[in-house]
Length: 219
Image (cartoon, rainbow, N blue to C red; front, side, top):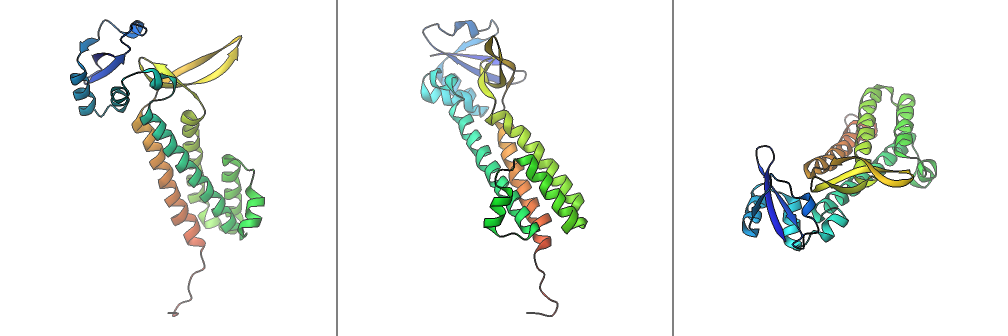
């Protein structure tokens, strides 16, 4: 492996390339050769998960065929959080509509996330109109989160400027990537956190207010 550093724009970024010269086209004039020890020091200080993953593996082959391991883990976190959020939306619909789980599954089983959001809004309009503003805001957040989710889950992963990137795949005589965008691990984990926060809003602002309230004076 050959290691380089580049100042972007106020911190050092580590780059790693195969020693056989097969990736030398990616090495820019502004990149400075460094030792593996310096590469580890910079990557650790900047919490550069991509570089650290390459340094651990000792090769870029696995990393550039798929997203690096750190990114795979973030994708998994997004998938888990989005699945949990979708289950809770369905549960909220069943709760508002007063359906048991078996009937509820038949009612919402094949609905997509946008359809589920519209279904929940329509039910709230009928059953609990005083909550419609809260539900409108929550469903807007859900749709926006799932739009961001699609970027990481459904677009094709590639490389741009030596870093993991995603882009849409389309056919035009041949397959190519359109508008590659570098991907930030912090943005990916923020999406997972945002989905978890929306779950809390569904519980506190939709499900809890519609639970049967104990009668006054009862123990």
